[in-house]
Image (cartoon, rainbow over all chains, first blue to last red; front, side):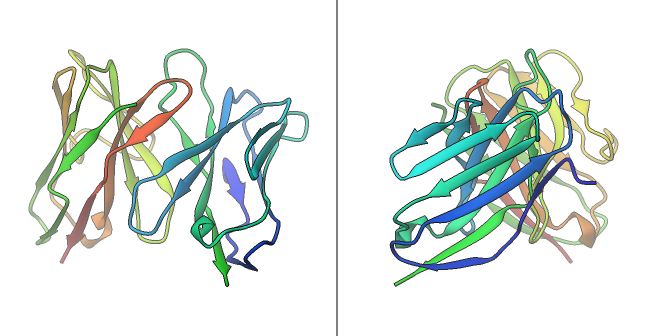
Length: 113
Length: 112
């Protein structure tokens, strides 16, 4: 079983649609959780951190369920510029090893006019 | 935030040769991380580089194949040794905090 699993998609949605991505992780001791975005031929960039209480940033909402080891990302009112690969990322370690990230395989999103 | 540059941005190399990738950060950082992204795949951590000590390698990666230097707090190199076509990947360095990791633009390596 992969440490971080995502549905690779691709997801093809029209502008204005709402789309949800899911992710599961295997290490119950994992400490922190993130969604990163990677544009074609570019490096990953942080989209948002994920907290148990849920967090929202504009059109984006992230949720963490520690009991189910499940992470989600909801994008509302999709824009063409949202087209990218969305990476579910987990930091399985505590302390100073915050850069030792485990990445899911990514979910490809294409938003069309 | 951190600004990270990498050299070279891309290279095409013959099998059996070695390539050294440089990573420069615009601020002093304790730890730097090297990742690999194989074609169509996500990122995999190769090793953690601390200044003044030997790098710590993840399972599946060894020092003889991927020697790392960390001479100061703003610079690191990763060497891909005795290359084979399977080493064709994007290699990225990374720095950051508990809240966010920043990645360099990557070095796109093709081994023929």
